[in-house]
Image (tube, rainbow, N blue to C red; front, side, top):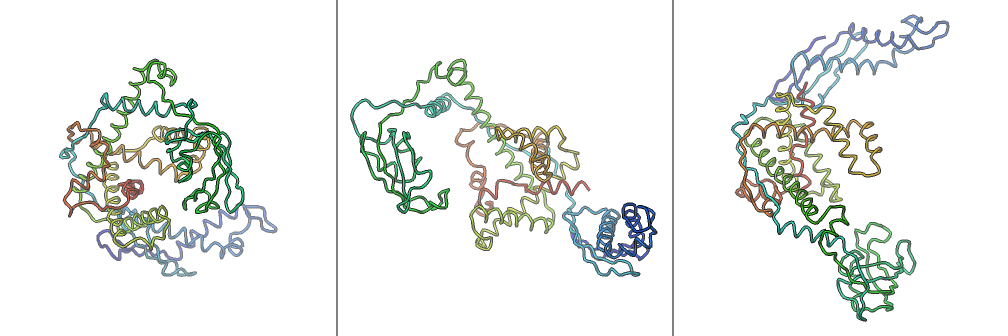
Length: 470
């Protein structure tokens, strides 16, 4: 095999690979010997047929397979001999492949850049922290009690008003026809809750027990049922009773009804839960600041193919969520998404290099725990989730990627200098994207793209990790 470098332009390399006919025939003979062990040929037992007879019958059909094997072997050898670290799958162009003349092909490959990592001891970050105060805990208790409301009948004779619970029978029609799912009896409807079709609840205000009313509404255009979306409907409604919501008193008995020993234990549970939420938000801010620092400190050429693939992925997701074609996305927004794609790839490569240099890996136990946590999100369907990850390596890899990122981030934060700064809850819970945008001069603000496109700063990290390990 002869390997000749044709071009070495920064990250873009090109090689010509030549295999003579003898090498191709050697691969063909090896494959024919494999086949001869199992094929049945008249007059011969399996494995005993002469190789030339097997060649005559199967040789032509195997040419495509031999070409693929030869190209893979040649590309692998070219990569290994030149100690290349491909960013993506190399592009192959077969120049010639003929009997008696061997194989010649060209391999174009884009490489991962050489990254000189910064000294993480020079990273200085401020970690925002907050603690729930008595007022915040009391407000949370009120919300818990609000969600545990019961109701009781209104004793005085009066009309329905906002906040009341109307006990109703209803039967709806669209285009004069009764439709499934548009009928109910003894249904409790809290007026002002916006739990029914827009305009429905308002037409019951002022009605009394035993009143019958014809309620006219229009289903929203984005209604779940396409048969009803945008349609006008008429409901025959009868008010059977009027109730009013009753919020429970927040005391020891209320706490016990929720499974706690007393009110103090309930308050402690709420405080712990709120603190966990604050800590998660604190980490989110800290991680964003760290990524900004990494982005600022590292300068290197990005593999165009990786950036293009990430940009395409973002545009596809945005178009899918907005239910439009990618071509309908404004050019100005495409530029913003292109910048986000470049930042994602850059940070993904930096984090991958940190992991590679420091031998940071996700072990099997960590991966299993992540699968268990994911399964716990779907009560009653845990077994199906386990089976899905067992049968789908790609899904398992997507679960592995954020674990790797967090592990690398934790590694860097252990080295960096961190100062804690206690802030208000409002400041802590502020969206990190808005916070970063406001903190920078207008000329340096990050692209104001959709949050869904921003939310995964290093979305290519798993690919970079896999490639950098070669």
